[in-house]
Image 1 (cartoon, helix red, strand yellow):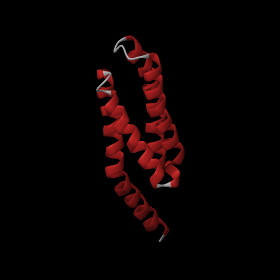
Image 2: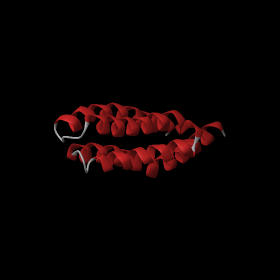
Image 3: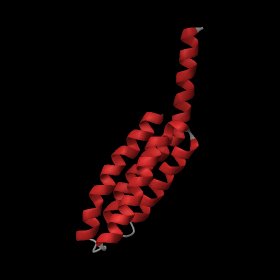
Length: 113
């Protein structure tokens, strides 16, 4: 589950940073504001990806990144779709990830025992 979470957040960094020029050129967002917001979301993703193996803080940062990505969609409409896709992936991971981990541990315990 940790690897998948880190992968989602890592790919999201690229998407968020590629959305910054779109915000500047199409949505007429100021250059500084766009880079500050995009950089902030990207930083949340990087910190989340780096800390998911340490438990809850990484997942909290990842969730904050999802909320910020969707919120960016109210300024840059394309981010509603992209942020929504990543948020959906994230929340599906949070929902079924622990169940998959338990089933994997049970299978390993059966094979060992």
